[in-house]
Length: 574
Image 1 (cartoon, rainbow, N blue to C red):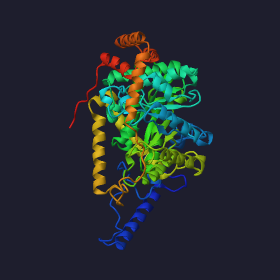
Image 2 (cartoon, rainbow, N blue to C red):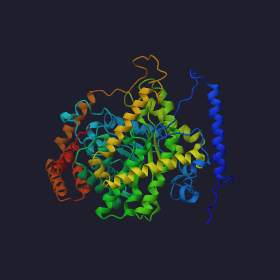
Image 3 (cartoon, one colour):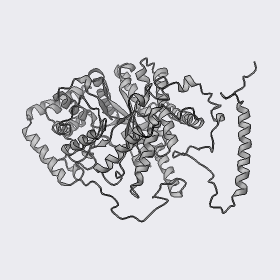
Image 4 (cartoon, rainbow, N blue to C red):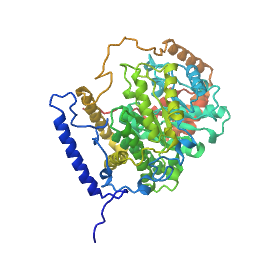
């Protein structure tokens, strides 16, 4: 049987295109050889690559897609259609522009409440809450370990009383709220639910996202409390409870952002993030849940780095991989289970203290890549975040960046406008292929939890971070203002936000006053019941909700669980 000739849609034989391209390349090489002397300042570098060091051709043609044999309906299809390469919703941003969710949180609950209201007045469409380091680690402000950190990198929340102040005057049935917290996420979620209940908001109207991704903490961000398995158990408790009781709450935001910020490549970010998601799915199924019960409420969170096309392709590949695995391997029947819905944030690691106004440009380019990649929600970093928490002015510039893209650029008028580009499709395929290889390797190791225990993703990220740093030092990669185009700058180039140390004392005083007026015996009983539930391997959502309603503090709840689960200590590796 004769083999059918491979042709491109314009009728040209692919072999004919390949030969023509080879002739063109020869003429180009000849031209360059005679036009540049060895000492010429215009001599071309030997190799071009993405930020992740994937080689980039000078030109992409149909021959780059010849091996993959792309089938439009199978591999791309239409927006809102499996495998969602071109977006998860049929009319994408024509129907609803992406959620603009600026990260906010500093000092006290009252201070952050004012920032929330300012952002909502200026057109932000969702709240995103940053917590300070003591809160992230499950520690109260009056603990010695909190000294110097209260309110510094986010808002201090130690009790239901703080959560009530944080959302005072903000109707939780009308806004969506994202909360970036992981190890003690179940406790903070319980506080949020208690506030919503006090406002009289029906469960089905409580909408938002809890980051709650503890696996990436062991991989990259290193903010943990408990050993891996009980920590994952807490995540599954929230998924199980919210699936039954809060149907519109995204119980976990599986986060590649921190993996990328730690030095991962785009492929590693994608692979390790999806592997984390599959790990949670496996644990839910082991708990007795069906895939279509919980998968529709899983959400994702990706970084948006500097390489414009690589980032666009990463989002497209992510949707396709997740859709195929959910449908073909996990047997999900609900199309919502196949959809990878994602929040994105511009890359904090690309912000520079040198010439900080340049960060406005970086953020704009990254935000545009996220939108062209089809993100569903977006946070744009402020120019001063490498120096301090952002000022009101810099936050406004960051928000306006999104609004200009949405309202003035026209890019939201068409779904996946770069789809069909030879380069975009070939790079999407390359990222997909390399990410799937990582996922298979992790499965062969026994799954994501086992691979983390062996230090595999941690080592891969460390090697990539070292490689990129070497490229910066050799100037193979350029960071404007850092290793090229430096200028002499004044020590205080811009105004920054200062968090007064008196905040810490005020928070301690509030906490001590709360402890004196709350029902002490009730708190003791609720914590005792929580400990008993943990010892008996019960779902802990309801016992924790009961405890925080009695005004048990964040640390009291976390320490109670620590008595059962112990504390995690990472094994060193060199």
